[in-house]
Image 1 (cartoon, one colour):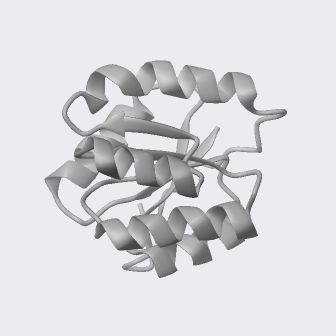
Image 2 (image 1 turned 90 degrees about the vertical axis):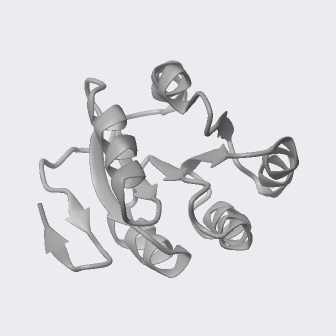
Length: 138
C-alpha cells in the first residue's frame, strides 16, 4: 500500500512517518506540507491512501480532502483531528477515516489493516520516499 503524508515539517511529521513505515507492506510515497503539494503528488504518484495531519491549517485540510475526493476518488484518506467538530467536518467533506491526534499511535495499525482490506489491489511499491516540498528523495 502506498501512502502520502500531509503534515507540517518537524518532529511530529517524523513520528507519523515512522509509525506508518513500521507496518509491513506499507510504503510512504511522499511527505508534503501543503495542500497544493499534496494534490500535485497525488496526481503524479497516485497513492492508495493520503494521511492528513491536524498540524496543517484546518481549512486547508478540508479543501484538500474535498479535492482528493473529486480529482482522485479512488484514493482513500485518513484525517488526524484534534476535536470532535473537526472530525465531523472532515467526514462530511469525504474523509474515509478519522483518528484522534491524542491516540493516533494506538489506532493507526488497525486502520491501516482495514484500508488494506478495502483496496481492490495494491499498487506497485517503490523504496524511494519523495519529499515533494524540498524536491529531494531520501
